[in-house]
Length: 475
Image (cartoon, rainbow, N blue to C red):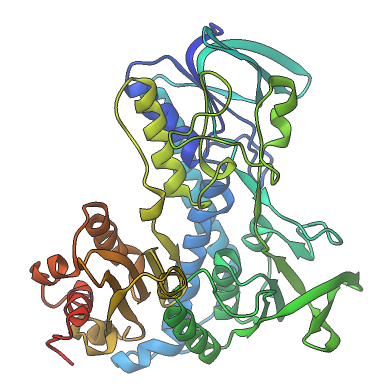
């Protein structure tokens, strides 16, 4: 194998593998270096997202939701099911098969696009305008290659609590939460963010008594306050116990279970769980890069400092995804990978971080893009709000999924859409209309004037846009 490349990509997650493929499409000679190993200890492309994150979690969410439909929702459709049981091994096997299909698919895409794949840990030894030197270590094997450009896409890792490391037996990270061999009777979750809510939802549906402990004073503070309030009501009614303003002070493993010590207001107490998921955030994978050696600039939290075009302080070295500023989201990383590859090719490309959608795949789903109502108030921006419930939508009623609403926030002066917030069925799909509208500076009136198919869930978006001007048609 030649050790001369146009572009070396460090990391084969959603940012890295997409960057490598797009660069190869543009005519560059590309190598993608990745050290990820799956739960079986084998090298696997796709990073956290495809192996132990986005894809397997959605597979388990769908399986657990199907079980809940059978046991709690089919009766309303006149369908009676008796003696419904869970075969967890089959459920996990289906999840693993989907993962293998997609990670194998990336290997196929690399072959199709003539991307060289190397397993190992890559780091930049030197960078100059003439090119970069990259070291690749795989066990005892050490190899050096040259590349004109480097794209760092090494992703992130789950953050452990300082007094309690992960063992993925009793104290679980996202990977451990996806691989439980039995349904725990009592499941604790520390952190009410995306991972905590999604994994808590999976195991609650399958029979666990789930308690979610959140340090922040209110639930889901990143979302719009109206959405957070509605979500808390629905999730609590469905059986999730969610406690906010909780400070966890200690975790102890005792006789095959976990004892969590916490302060809840003025009270100190301990709670016992059979398993504990810790989902308190993620940290960038930058330690193995030996940033000091190459002179790569990191911020105080360990993120690589980049400009608006993902350029680092080193010549010809870029960084994308979870290792840089902005939301730690797979789709954000992918689009940054495309933008950087095209930028290296001399094309104009960018990613608007203000228009990156967020999704939580609970039931109902939660999705949003742009500003929240509380952020607009704090900034003193005058706005108008329009909200419409799924309860008044024919398709939602027919589906039996009538919880939630769509909320549109528009500038009070020019009616430009500033934010869209959805809690309801298929919110992950509906949010794309909002992203397109905002990317093209659409007004609420523009959305109100678009013909939406009937009957469809998208009509709720239409009615919410009408509600901005207080002229809804169906309530």
